[in-house]
Length: 116
Image 1: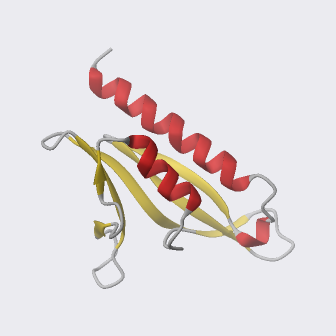
Image 2: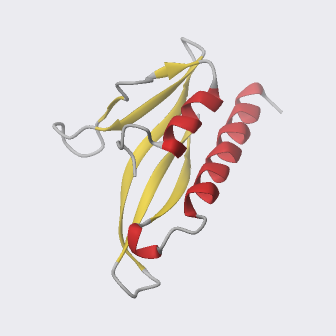
């Protein structure tokens, strides 16, 4: 198993825990957290529900954690509000770190109310 595969499994495992922790006891009307694997990372998704519905009405991308091969650091990005869709910008408070736990904690706790 290559190092890249180990890193991918690690980030997916952490993303799963972040979503499980955020979804515990959270009413569906406030949205649910999920994630999708990407090449060298994951992207976090907020699923939006209508009142009294058990089916997702729509979803929005809220954050991305990816491994940058050149710098050998994890990067945390958020969707750009000014650029066209699918444009991502560095998260202004913790854009890059060698510590994956620090970035996943930032997404989970959302101290600046950027993600959820």
